[in-house]
Amino acid sequence: MDFSLAASVAYEYILTINQEVVTVWQRKWTVVTWVFMANRYLMIVVAILNVALWTAMR
Image (cartoon, rainbow, N blue to C red):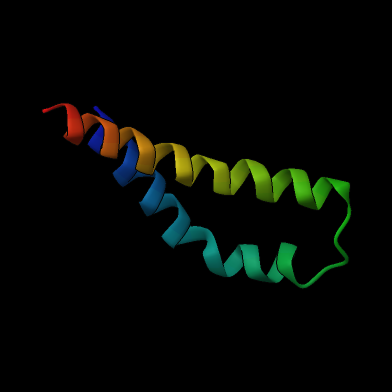
């Protein structure tokens, strides 16, 4: 299940990176922008850690 989560997260990020650059990165950074970025990129960290911990336990 951890690999499917990581694959789903990676796929979603690949599909939406262009839209994110246009709508988020090129605007003035506010608290909402920081919360969005923290939420988005912490999800990547969590997915990577889940896979790393799962493979380390095997």
